[in-house]
Length: 307
Image (cartoon, rainbow, N blue to C red):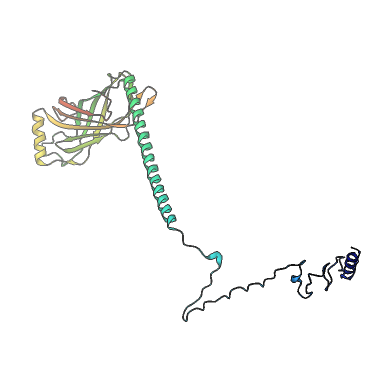
């Protein structure tokens, strides 16, 4: 035992010292018994140091494909390379496109339905309002008639000495009867009105209807005048008018068009035209002429008016 310790102490003294204070084995040393000798030139053969050294494998040689003659090599940056999308994307695009079209069609159809419902609702409300007005005021159509027709400027029309151009004048006395309406007044607008007198289709004179307001349950008699200038008759028409005057029945047509507005309590309606056509005959062509026959037709566009 003392021999072994002295031998171990001698080997420790022979070991070289490193700068960091660590002790490394000497280049030539043996173990305690001297059985395991190793070569200092090959540390891996030592039982205390066993290492496995492998040489690095060189990378495989890169073979650069040389372009064929007459070809070009285009280098594109990596961030500019776009891959081809899969076919599923095309199917998804078609699916979403069809769905968008269906949604657009549904939106248009929904808008049309809403518009139709709104129009129908408005029509129902308007019909209800008209029905309420009819029940509240019970409007009736006024009655119109031409009481008399004074004629001037046609005396001696059948004589050979009568002038070629005549200026006839007419004063029609009109009776407007609104007694059937106890709650509805009538406004007559002079602007846009017309009173025309003709003989056998030949226009003789034109005038206007006077503007006034007719209260409910009221009868108004007024005069509407018409005047013509430069009227010429043929020989046949002159002869016919002279013969009719001898028979005490000279026919005339009186056409009246006047815009009217209804007064329904505190509400005034829009203006609508009222047309009156009277076929009448007088006994003479003078201011004192008397009406011997008359027939008047009244047309009013109010649907809820009753005769």
